[in-house]
Length: 138
Image (cartoon, rainbow, N blue to C red; front, side, top):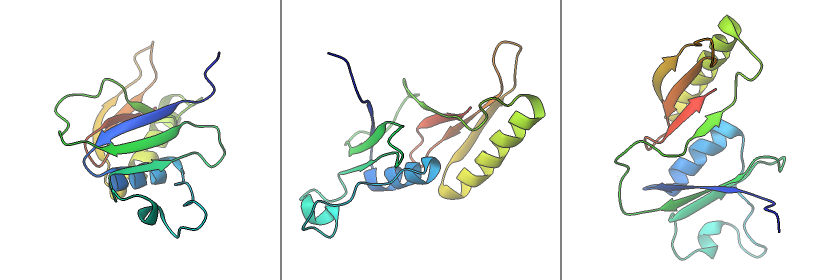
């Protein structure tokens, strides 16, 4: 048996807020409510305890956000790389990273350290989402 799909799950305090942030970052969309319901809030008795979204093209993994009681205390062991500089090098890559950073900061992202190309790896920019989860602009 082979795996056909992957879902990335985020533990968070505010699933809807974090999920909507990632929808904006990636161009993802939440699924439509089931037939007969105007919204997911009508379906779930635990309003705001989870949020899901997916790539409208069907290529990227589904993202699922679930409320957990504990807060984030250490660096993520897994993080997303937002691939905005693929195929670009040097100043052109840096410009793409900076432009995407400028787009994400008004959404609530926090800029981290810019790691410059070192001969082995290309430049990337560390960032955090609205709850402090690390991700990279790559």
